[in-house]
Image 1 (spheres, one colour):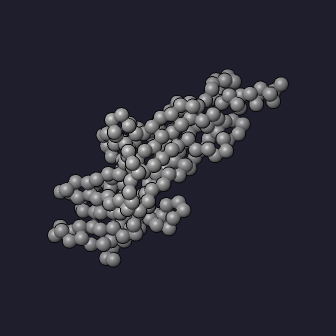
Image 2 (cartoon, helix red, strand yellow):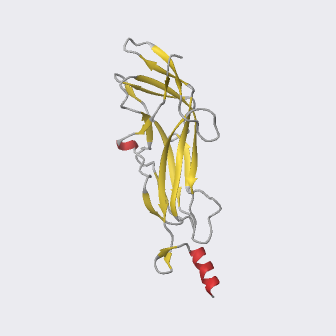
Image 3 (cartoon, one colour):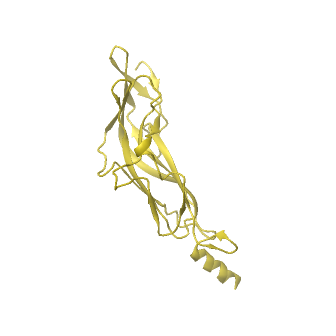
Length: 197
């Protein structure tokens, strides 16, 4: 290979934006979703549009990893995650998936479905990341239209030796307000009361 490149992605703007990120007030037994099935819009990512060149990268796989869990004051909820994820929109994406950007022909995106469901005692910030595993080789285009293979040098994702790209999302879970206005889930509130008695 003649050269290497780090492949970067960005969120699709407009209808594909990740509306789940930064949402607050996810109470127990409630749910929010980044996708809107009524309108058929899903969060999506694309190759970085600041590139003034042709680039094709193949995605080999996709996964979701929750990195930050929070629980009630007394205990953590057994590391139960609040997120549910799958790659694609109405059906799962078939891999390998070709992402491309071209100054003349435009670009494509990959969508995903991401929801979060409140759980009792899952309070505080919950953070997770969607990872797409990349092929170790991508293609770059020259002004003459020639396609040249390039080596991808992105950092490997979790549980993989292959390069990857990722996007991170977060939600804030709130539970029953009690004990002077502190947010605490009902099960922890009962344990605190029993300990005091």
